[in-house]
Length: 350
Length: 184
Image (cartoon, rainbow over all chains, first blue to last red):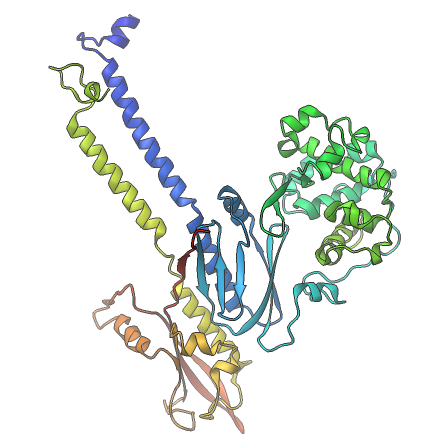
């Protein structure tokens, strides 16, 4: 039956060539489909789309506007193309937006507004600060270092935030602040359990996750050095950094802080589970917080969350206010976490 | 292998005929060329850009529905007042702006009776050509500037508020460009 139905047809003809014929045709059309898919998601499409959207946004804006643009797709495409250097450049002289996601070309789009634009890429977002041409020029660094930040108003901590876990912190667990509410709801019990185990302030961990990933479990941020070479990537809810001489190196097997984190074992590192498993990602991130607090002795809330973002080296041996940390950490990252914390702990909702 | 692929039944088992391979090649090349052409073509945002420019001009020459002071003066500088870039508008010739200010009888409220005109005046002709004719037929030309035209009723302040009408025509031919970087 098998032989007759498969190798020979009912009339005795050989079916095998027909099968090969069908397979070859399927293969041919599959290759075509893959080609079309690759063409539709190629760098050129995104270069063009980003350049035009940014130019239109600039023209649509009025002076003293701040724009935040999600560059995650551009970073992803640039990563695939091993792009070296800036992805987006605003040429104030020629009034051009230049977007390059490969090392081969750049897409240029002009805008018609006579504005002076400061731009900076931070945590996967492009921040544009628009002022009228001829205004006193200030870099974003200067603006963020000043008392009034154009993006996030300065926030002070009212009262002391305890770094440690306390009974009663879980009472406000019903408050969801992120746009990834399902993810937040799903992962809150895990955060609560781990925060209690690690003696960490539950709401502070939630506030940090909201700032790091917005509770997006697929959040990914590529870090580059000053010449544009990719040095590490931050993964998942707590944006666990995979640098061997960074957080993962510290909490992973053989690291300074692995004693606090038996969960982050060789299997987790080898299988890169911190990228895909939310619980392990939270274990890794919270363990790094414990590492910063207990191993590096950073026990001030602002310093701790700043160290989580900028590395412990900048926060050791100095008071937070006098430590040399990036202005984006001081003026955006830390205030955001404090604001989130207030929202989660029943204060003003962020 | 090739023989097996293309031999007919006399020479062996036929899997694919030369004719079929030809068909696949034609289809494949056609799809590849069409895909490359489609995805390497510029996305046209000129109409959108013209509309953005129109909005920008309206917002800068009116305040709460009243035309700003000095707009009737022949020396009125639209480029500077509206934060537009002189070089992009008047040297690169990527845009065209035509602003007319009229009273309800259609008389110009500008002291010199002329519209405010900036940019590439060739675009005026291109815009007119693209306007629908009496039969509703539209001239389409890919390389013509995209136009946006709208009339707006506003007040003009001349001791008292006078009802007036502004006619704004803007056109954009600002298309992005791809620059190939030299290999290091």
